[in-house]
Amino acid sequence: MSPKKRGKIAVLISGRGSNFKALHDAIRTGKMNAEMALVFSNKEDAPGLGIARQRGLETLYLNPKLFTSREDYDKAVIHQIRKRDIDLICLAGYMRVLTPLFCQQFKHRIMNIHPALLPSFPGLHVQQKAIDWGVRFSGATVHFVSEEVDMGPIILQAVVPVLQDDTEETLAARILVEEHKIYPEAARLFFEGRLEIRGRKVFIR
Ligand code: GRF
Image (cartoon, rainbow, N blue to C red):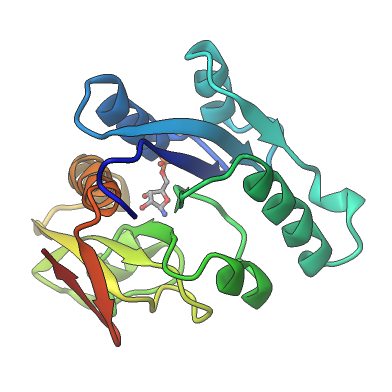
């Protein structure tokens, strides 16, 4: 997008929302020229929604049980996003796999943060998987979302050492610190119009 326009961002969450907070903090402190136009959740009690309300942000919850299919649910979410003229959608602990329809509607405009060095350890509980595998390094990845889960073009990564006495919790906590740095950075690069996707590679201009 044009670096001059003030972009609009929607964050989709299902839980605690610390990455949403990091993104919003980057906006509040003037590090990113964007407006957080929507914080959306599929979970009514997501703690992140409460934080968003305290910060005076627009929030929305849609109950998946009221929809007959995943596609119908995503159509409703797409409608809400289109209504607000959103430029960038950030998945931040959003525990639903997006339908192909959703991915196609916003091609190269959806990002996700993943707590491992993709393409190693896609999926869930990846900090424990990294420990169990015995890797010396793990980390965090921000990538564009494609239809294949956790496999879209990689934007930024941060490396975190795995220590001998790490537990899932201690490793997750150290990775999270890096997540909070690289997610706002990736979004900033997007809003500055500096991300160029060629095939499955992202070039930073
Ligand atoms: C983070 O570890 C993120 O990498 C993963 O889900 C977790 C969300 O945490 N996708 P939070 O809700 O942003 O605190």
